Image 1 (tube, rainbow, N blue to C red):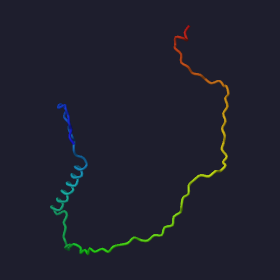
Image 2: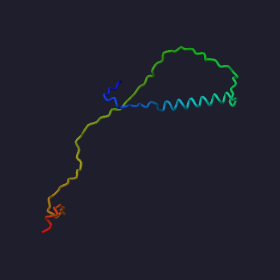
Image 3: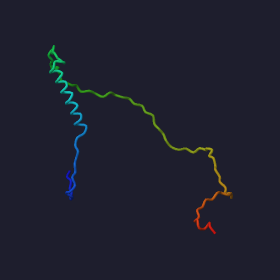
Image 4: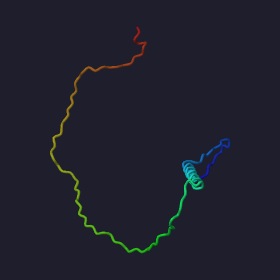
Length: 111
């Protein structure tokens, strides 16, 4: 991806780095400590038995899937007509006094 800029007075600095450098530094410090411990004789390792690679016989026989007899239930969804008690809410109009809030200009109050 390229950047096309027309103003040449602006300097753009891209900071690169992050957790990868930190992890590499920690691994390097640990490796250095291990080398110093072996070099000073604080740690020592003696090989008492030589190792060898395992012998592997690579042969495979074709497998088969198990047979399964599966019985399943059916789910039936739908609607049916039935009678249910339903509450009925009624409203009526009635004349009552309610508080009123208004805003007036301060000049109209003075006479």
